[in-house]
Image (cartoon, rainbow, N blue to C red; front, side):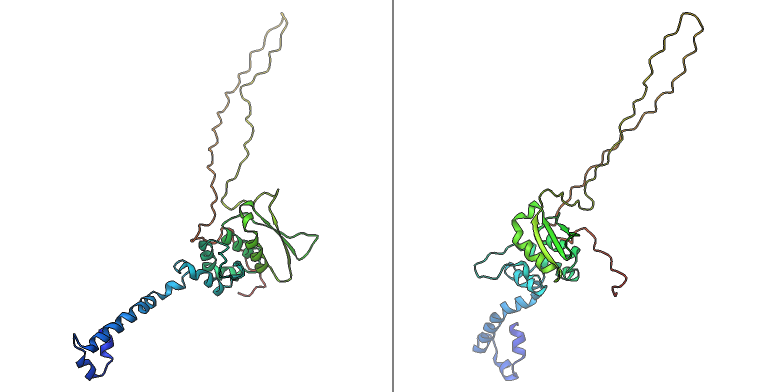
Length: 252
């Protein structure tokens, strides 16, 4: 609050006494200096709660606001964060979207990809074991098994048991828009002729049948593969796989 604004709040007698060089003027200047830091914080207070503008020390606290604090380990003063701050910012930014799809395969896969920055998580539901889920972790996320386990336990339905295993011997999922290999047909030999049949000395010879020229085959245009990229730290978008459509029984 500026000195002039404070001075206008004083009674008329004090306003007349607040001349430059007086004790009252000095006190008003001290009050202005004391208010300046708090006013600077209030002027930009929305930055404290924006996922990508909040201070690093406040991001872990913001995960509680969007019910994503289960990603963090049990709080200890000396415990480091289990994920980079950028990954936590991504989870906070997409917290409402994740809450909408919690308890579904899409929601679990999206939370895992945002938290780890790795794609290729495989979710299996064995037919011989109902209400059981097997989550296979790709090799790039093998060092985050503790974080993956906490996310899976929180995102799964309450009545479902779960098992987290490394992805050994199982091909990773191909993201949409990834490279695709199109088999080409084998080349058909053209211009080949059968061996001539020998004829006897007597008898007329039949004229040779003209062979039509082979039609040239245009070479196939090579398709450049699209290299899939994971979400960037600090500015991740929701993974590209589309969420399932709502069922007819689901109210709009």
